[in-house]
Image (cartoon, rainbow, N blue to C red):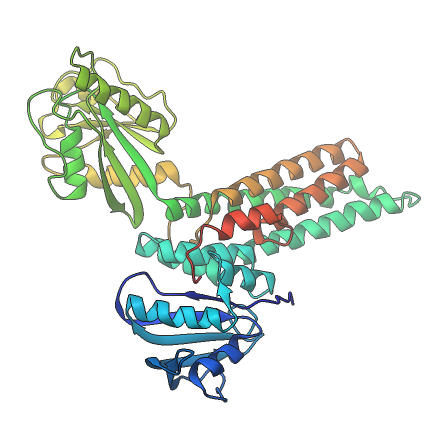
Length: 439
């Protein structure tokens, strides 16, 4: 277990006033500090104990509950004390000031979770899941974060890691014993095992891509000419008059954003100015913003007016969905189009189909009771691992065992970086600095 010489403390509850506030202390001096703060000598492990908190002049600050968790059977793996007092802003900071005076220091953002990781209480995926759980923007995201925290994602990574290590042992053994008459590198079973490894990684990558969607949500730009019903579409999906609608072309001149949930996934809808030629400088600015947003969003809804004959459809962007609005008054010639979504922002027709298409556009995996949250760095490492596996297979086909073994070694390093077995200090600093203080 990693040892830390100092003791850290922080307020673990959200800023502001509340019925209860929590201060968390972790480290070798945690028990000694709470004994001085309360003038009590004994604290029963994992037992809620009512006590009084005093300052250095023996002045009563507050009364509350103390919980003592001796290491290593604690969240951080160290001695941990939690103070539960009245949740007033001043009370919390008076208590924290006393804890600091008695020998603790202010914890950095995410330092409690970092110590849990360094002391092998959780892996890096589980540590990140804590932050994702706190920031969860939907029930689906919260449940998926909880699965990651319980080790669902890590277990799948470790399963693949075991297969990868077995394959490495096979290849390196064949290299170490070249005098054997049997060519182990040409064994068909070895190539089948590499194929299975590649397939398992590809499936985990697909699930992880869905996990990233649950984690960060989706940004959707609603693009189209003036008066095709973009704002009406936004209003229907938000179930309120988020944007002003009018028969006058160019009503929307600025960007309008609204957050909704679609099939349990957090979504930010962005209504933009109608794209057309305009001499109005204000409208021109809105059109420029619309084009910039179009380039940055995850999904683009290309909206057309179905009540008028549509000459051509633009579906060149990979992340775009063509939406023909006003299907309740559809022009006959527009019925010929396929691979489009017909909707009516007026009646709601086709809206469920549109929502389903949006989710399918950003996720190759269904969100269900096995979903977990993931981050972009996980996708990067899985893709890197896949590339090394593909290279290893190529070298084995050329019967170059040494290069295949090196690719498998690099694949193992890439996969280990997900759970944190091999992680740079810079990566750890970046991850934990995004956590809230007290976690």
